[in-house]
Length: 405
Image 1 (cartoon, rainbow, N blue to C red):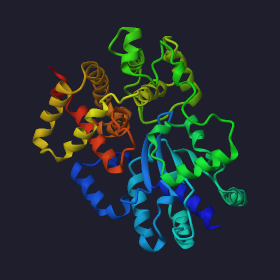
Image 2: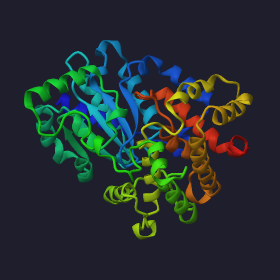
Image 3: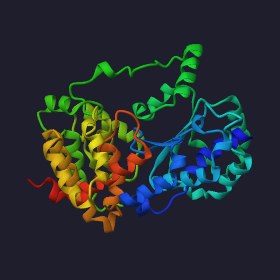
Image 4: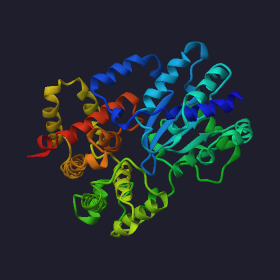
């Protein structure tokens, strides 16, 4: 029962949400909160790993990172989880739960798990789109079947997916965004060697089959060399359509879109076709298609080289930040990247101008675009996510000062 309650906990604890407007505070507020939970955050039990293939935020919980129960205050752990999830659960999101590594030494008490289950209201589960349980044990599966009749929401039960091997996650999210704990990697390798699953284990089979017309999952150089334009067609078409048709759509860029339609749209773009978004009948499709394009680039639009300098901006005095960012954009960002970034941020300023209707101000948009404009070669820490979001907000709020020559 304790294993089952852990799984309920690792699902339910993610859904305590506050209004979306609270999701991005000032640098000083972020730093104060980080310091408050430093003793919990240092274990890296909970991580944010960018977006999945459909533009939904990915939250990772690793059971193997739980320290022995005597060495952690589980009540503070719960509060920290709420603090983290408050920033994301107003949007569609998914959970990846690494179950391997849960032992009798680090397993929380049953009373604490029951407290979590009772404390978190059903409404916090509404935007959870999928919960991936990686390396589930037979005991977990049996217990889930036993307790399934007591779960009020039938839809919630459908969101749970068992993942037996790590490579299965590639079908649903950007696997390279995940920093999988070494213990989990070792366990998975043993299972693969022992069971020899049919699914090809290793690099994606389509790496060598890139189409000349492909736009998703390739470099900006690849796209420019074929199409001959600085602004990739997928960016041009999505931005143009959104500007003309979606500035007043509530939750634009925040909501997800139909997965089947998104895949069809990506396929058309990769084949060099023009997409008629009016036929698709959903303004969120071009919005998510743009976000996915940015996240699928082989190198982030703001480049790997600028990752650390941008993170260090929080140490720069407020009155100097805009000037420093302007210098970085004009002197260190490649010209093509600069032009694409300017093109996209200009659209975001227009979305903000219509925020009374679409409910998307610069803070909301920053949370959506921060991790899609820049990420490290590994997984971003929770503290760095806040700095990336603040940087994205600075771009939007200071567009004229930053991009006017």
